[in-house]
Image (tube, rainbow over all chains, first blue to last red):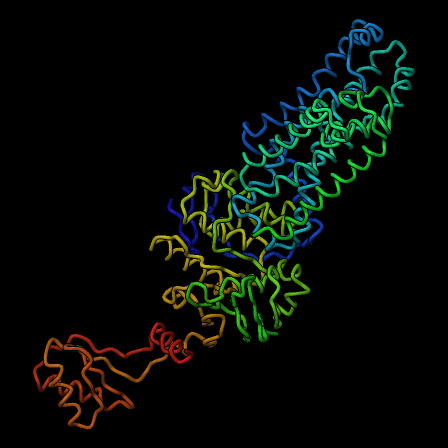
Length: 310
Length: 305
């Protein structure tokens, strides 16, 4: 039936029963007198829908491949190790070179990086590209609200991605020990590190990813730029060292992952991983770089959203 | 309380482009046509009224709220349909409109219910569950209207709502706007550069040109009868005009087939009838002339210049 705009009642369906014939009536326009929850509820709803979007929920199957694939692969070592731990035993498991809480994210951060490079540009790019921003800003919401809701969404998604594998490892190691209660007690001390390390990586990644993604509606450009920043950050310090520069280890502070590992090591100890092991920088260097990247990244991102054309 | 009120509203874009120049107006409820050529300042005015753009100087209130300080409160009560495309292609109309309802602060269940209501009103049925990328321009315009209506606004701001539509699509959209404004009783501002469309849906007209107010009045005053009768005959227009002039009627030839007759009272009607009969002319048409909006608009523009 072609859409008819008039307010005529729809034809009654053929009534096959003896009951009074029923008809569907166009009720006309009805106003809304119910509750209006206002700005805070709107921002919360935007956060929730954006968080779902980062996991491809409510989207096509293709949109789920990267986020769920990243979660599966980043969790795989924890699952394998939990299985080994349960069958062979903890001592043999550790001896086999399994991952530990202090090395997990340093070893597996490439998956968090893939997640960021794929999802941050999509989270912002779609609204920029399709000019949906004009509608958001025409609602009971400020530009700042929109930007903060999106930032919180990617941060929450990264947190889930980085907390889940070490949490699996936590339960795997606890449940695999001979004495269950003692097992949990042994592992409980790692809970702050599980959450803390995840937070360090997530904050850094979110700040870098969103600051870059805010500048282009083209997903491919944003993804490329994020990849470039991470690659250059990893490659440049090594090149500078090889060139025999006299500025010491400082160029390593261009490497986002080295900063994250440096901060994690400074707070939680354990073994230093990756390039950080070879460096002799003071902890304050890592902390300063960590704070600077987050503050500058978030500031650029929010600044951009105050000015972006809607 | 006026629906919209502005005082000496001026907006200057960077690069010294003057979009609005001391605009003062008061508008009461109704379906208000905002007409002006492209670049006259229509979209700028709408954005200022939404609190999205701070005016360079001057004051404006919408529904009694100040556009500078109370933008959020205004936007909670106003529905806005922008001129440009603004729909994500990968979600369905249902999902999108319901999401926009939540962005206005509606609870989840209410947003879903209202979405079903407004999509039915704009005439989207089964297709509302399909991704928007597969929609025609007409369907997309309906979705844009639906998202502006979903939170039951007190005021609708529609920027060039018939943009890109074919004639049939235009008719549908105009019918929809008239129904929304006049039957649902939602105050509506329709910005358009097409006078013909404004004429068909609006009850009140705001004409702006180069950021100035040309005219603000009920539509009826633009199209009132002029007291002129158009008489079209198959031939002999000059003879008819001459005879009527001889009887003291002010008549002048307009084209080879039509003459214009002033009708200050009932008398000329009989005289025209008698003259046509006496001269044995073939009468084609007798019509009361009305002001055409276009004529007035061009006249006002000339006067203003």
